[in-house]
Length: 157
Image (cartoon, rainbow, N blue to C red):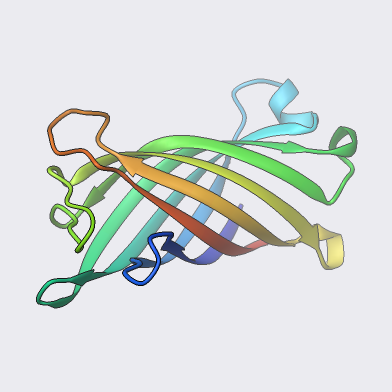
């Protein structure tokens, strides 16, 4: 189990949307191989705030989400380096819009890719760089999607 804080931004240039998130990582191992090998699964449950530049100023958008995440630790599970891939869903308090993007739904699917490093006593601390995309998968138009670069600090206990 772990808890984390995360910061990030879109990559538009001068009109980026920023994001702050806090969450928990809950282990999930439906098979023995995911309990004892270099690969593992966990649920990533989070709350976030997006701050977007809008025509009339700044807007804040609250978000909750759940992501099923597969982690692979290098070195047959003994390396401090790991990679992750995740897929899940999120719900925002209202459809997001900024000066460059406008969502048509409050519900979004999300995919995440990350590389990270464990450190400290017992490898209990982690730092990772993540790319995360949000989109409604063409449930309704417009569906421009939004992609963030994020940095996460996690502490496992």
